Amino acid sequence: MFNKLYYAWRVVATTVSMVLFGFGGLCVTAFAFPAIALATRDRDERHRRAQHLIHWLFRVYILMLEALFLIKVSTKDKHKLNSCKGCLIIANHPSLLDVVVLMSLMPRAQCLVKSALWDNYFLGGAVRSAGYIRNDVSSEQLFEECCRQLKAGENIILFPEGTRSEPGTAIKFKRGAANIALASGANIQLVSISVTPPTLTKGQPWYRVAKSRVKIDIESGERLDISPYLLHDTRSISARNLTRRLEQPYVR
Image (cartoon, rainbow, N blue to C red; front, side, top):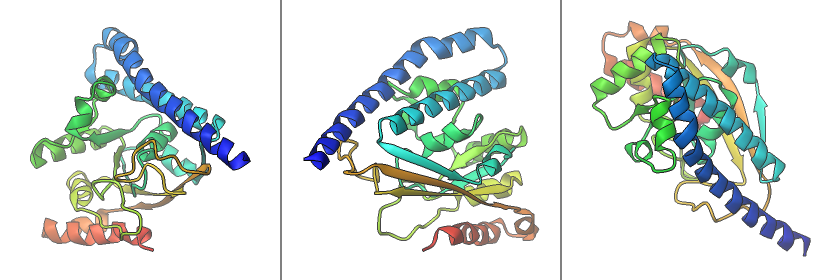
């Protein structure tokens, strides 16, 4: 009986949290971000203020999910994330909550977003106000904007798999992250994310609620110096070697 009641509570709490996420996105798009735009003329400063606001909103949201006993987030070596400046933050991508948790831990962070999210009715305003980078532009434009942001001291969160991991399949990174690192000369902070039991995975609808509290472990790993990879004459060889190196900590 207790297990059934607890599961019913999780279903109700999950539904409420999803509604609040969407409603909150509409509210900040309608009120908070226009206020930031009116008060801040400089584009980059406007983006930084919007990113900082998103950080605090996501932090409150994660605290709410923990208070509802839906998730429990634990971090290891969080100071490594706090000390990042002009770094690529590379992580595996087991859950839809990954980017929310990472941004809740970092006051300022850029990320690549799909065009569908850019135009999303609920979250599009937040994405545009924060100046997040669209992933549907040309490779040249993408690398140029990433390099500009990294050299300005911004951190960029990337999931080199390109999409959420499929449970039970081997992790395979694409070369985009390596190419951005090589083009910008930015060092890479590795982050490992573990979600138990698996939830909000690829193809899993949000309403398929886990039967127990979801534990999310965030471990900040090695800060990778890419200077040795800049010595190769051929960018494609360097990108291939660097991609293989990035995959190593995530191979089980």
